[in-house]
Image (tube, rainbow, N blue to C red; front, side, top):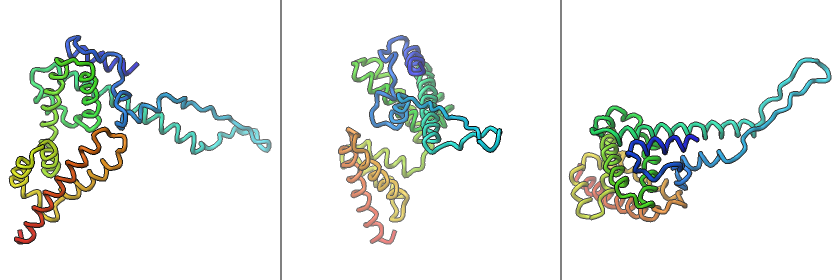
Length: 237
């Protein structure tokens, strides 16, 4: 029901042009954290516990919750939270799509431009691409790019640098970006911890269809930036 409401909200924001109605974007995106959380919703998580009376006492005893019950309660909370996040992200995306000043609205809600928001929003974009709705694709891409730029402005410079390098496919462009951001590439910079962690994360995402491409990019960035750090170390910078 919430997926229907979310898609209806988005369709309204797109002036009825959306072909995404009645689809659950989280369920459609295999491998995304939200999708894994929502898949639990297909199970029956209701478990009845029996109340026992002690033969030695007429007092009512409630048995302690078993690990299984606690686990199921936790799963239910996770599903509920994931669906709530989906609805909130969809409502924010709809607001961004309806406004004439995307940047201003994005800045107003910058704290809500979370990883979950971009995962869910990019899922709507993927669905629009699959269904060939070019008008919706263009609108979503423009809106998300503006929102991403607003969010990036609040991030650490090392994170902004990595995002920029990931967008650049030409070695010459990366070299220029690296030279313009040497302050982020000192030998002990947080940047290298970030790249190493990203490589480790992507390596573990066996089902990610973009895994090999991302690993190639990240390893190349790691190599190129560490060469710069090595040169800086030799110069005593």
